[in-house]
Length: 304
Image (cartoon, rainbow, N blue to C red):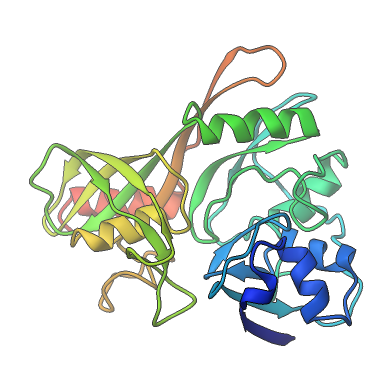
């Protein structure tokens, strides 16, 4: 995999990203560059973007060009936990440890591979690597995810994300005793300048992020929270909880090193609400906690 980091000069100021990259990287066609951008291989100032984005002087365009292989996502038979399905949408309970869509280092055994085997008709708006994917949850986060089966459904669900009428609720077990019964964290999130694999609360190249939380249960050394996303930034709950001093239990990136063995972070997408793209009916789905998570909570309740 080859890397590119390019600081935009006055010569290309105002150009579309894909148009500029064709000039900077003439070995790639514009169609191929658009494919790379659409599938997350190209960033502007460490943020995912669109081929049509206009670049500005001093923007940092970074890319990880994938190896010159045919990018094809193959259907794979999997035992998926389907909570609901019709001709427009699929709601799944994603297990902990499963990547949502293919990308660098994860070209198979993702949720998308399993969905393509299951239904073969996902929306094409997000390209061949992320068909049907309207929103994502982390590999080690379990729970509710809605997927679009056609472009009309995709556009409707994306609009609901934008105007905040799609509601997503998470259960988060955090280190420390939360004294507040509820609260709001409003702090912008962007790429961590010291570690490109992490996000951080920062005023540099960031986007607004807002998380609301309610305290559900307090234990000896940690607290169970219900968190509601008002925005959908990468690692949002994990970053926000670390920022206020209550990192997610078991989180390998943002939590304490001496965390208990919970087989991954204790973060679960417990509920999702949205308006059905065709019927306009209010839809509400919930996913039960994974057994390892619920067993750990039971141990805490018994003081173990």
